[in-house]
Length: 512
Ligand code: GLN
Image (cartoon, rainbow, N blue to C red; front, side, top):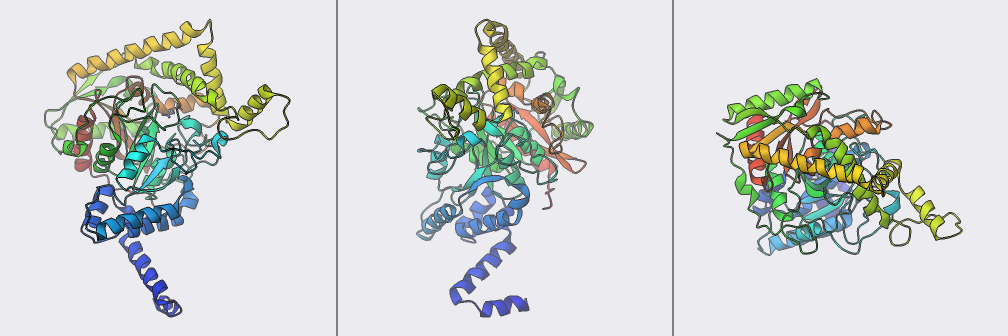
């Protein structure tokens, strides 16, 4: 304290006030709070948006070197946006519940004027000319964008190790992966380096990292959230969704990203409800189907134990739980690894060194050689593997045998879910078969890596909504509970998740 006072003597009065303010912010630890909590404090003028921003950036400065959640940070712009919110408050204007809330965005979502790499060398210099629809919507609410998060290249992976730049670490154990592909967004929330974040989910990439990092992640019904400006991986499966510290923030963020968008031809013309109104901690009489195929082989013991305890808790809350089946789920992973690479091989054809991003600097003889060298250098191994798989599956002569067959399996899985939802309000399973694994453990074994999404992939194939909520620790690492709903069943899954969260009271945090 003495040294602090002595140092203060050397400061100008402006610097002194700034220092006092930042000391106050640090002691308030605003970075630890949720968006709904911070909004109350903002509205009551207890704190300012600039103070929230200071708190989050000082946290980033403290832990980012260890966790590495971000590819890009936009501090200057964030403070400008925060100041604008404070001005609104000062002028007595009403503010949105998301105004002044620092958000981290997965680097697969286009942000005007801000580098958007998709975790790939081939887009390492790509600065979009436009915002994705979700970004436009959030900026309208005066949200404060603070940076773009690390991810597996083009969202292909389950560990964030496929990023062209660096791996992100799990805040619970820096020797382990945060999951993927939205690992940067999930780690940022777990490490309190952002208040809320956005991820994308093609086969599990929101829910699996949320589970491995002990946070909440929701994949919405296909078509509910616009994909305009989401760099395409597998267009019939991709969805953007929230990753947050609690279920209330998840519902809050969802409220502002949903809705019809004429720029996305798969966007659904559906009038969304206010998802916050779904949060009642009352689930008496709700019928829950436990998916027996998703708790069998390959599911780690510690995951099973926490899952079973979660079911007992839901039962104590008055839910009726029965075992049920998705008879074709065993084929989901195989169908996904035909359909997703097939779509990816087509979507990624656009990266040719002409229209976007990186181009080889090697000397080339002609156009074809330029394409080949650019793509050879610009894409990583996993992306090349998927392009080859997808191109093969779509080639004449094999198309019916692979792609056609996979689409038939997809229909059977859709039917399985339909049948299950005739009887149950929601379905449950663990989110991930394992807790966070060690960095490098599955990197050289793509098949082992692909198994990480065994519980999440069927949901994407059927276009359904599902949420992952923390449901305990196994050997000190978080486990996630997956709650799946019928199409447009976001309200019911949020309601069950909220009741579970309130009753369970998961309070553990990683120590960093
Ligand atoms: N891990 C899965 C894959 O690699 C899912 C990825 C995702 O949801 N984006 O394809």
